[in-house]
Length: 250
Image (cartoon, rainbow, N blue to C red; front, side, top):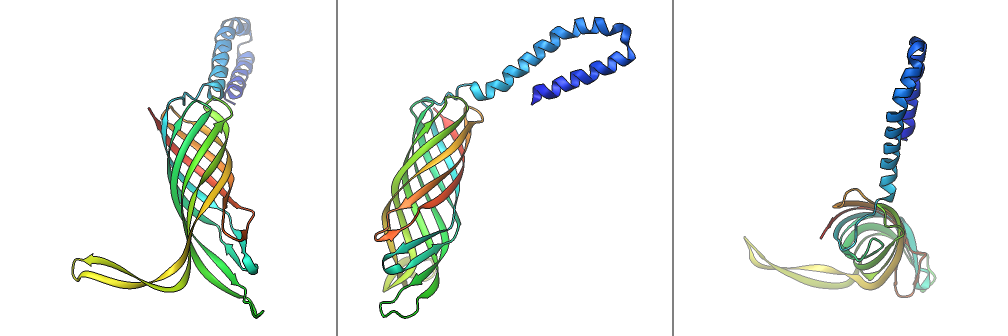
């Protein structure tokens, strides 16, 4: 793009000079041709460098800040009960190591909050009942990334495997107690309603693009599928979009 703009500028100025100084045109061409060619060649090399320069990722550690957005999804459970989970945002932080420009291993932890509409199905065949709930999840993931190129700009594919904790927000009917030391009241206990929770195996895959801005800063964008292995449930998986800002060091 830069080279095209420069070529247009050179051409416009040459035409202007031709109209106003025709007697000097031949001399100008001979004196201008060599430096213009060198400049255009240099800009071409600079433009190509962005895509061809090695990323120099080998042996680097990296810390990543990972905001994400998860699309809405319906999960169907035993008996026909469903949970229509709305789209929601999340955040994670990760640490990784680059074995080479191509291969990277990382570990991340994160959490997300969302809402859902649940549908209860009763055994007596009465009308299903819908209700609103709030969902909290947190996860620990181990990921393996393969970069398709060693250059600063490269597409990549990533596989994830981990554990996801889910708090459904649905009361179990049990009442628990939580206690703490208060600066005014001293040791104090209060009841709270316990909710249904679970810790399940989770896994998924991402496809994205990485750009090493400098040797110390990189950005990534990806889209992928994430699955949570709920008992007696079916789902096509959660579609997750991530934009990552990372910092590399040795």
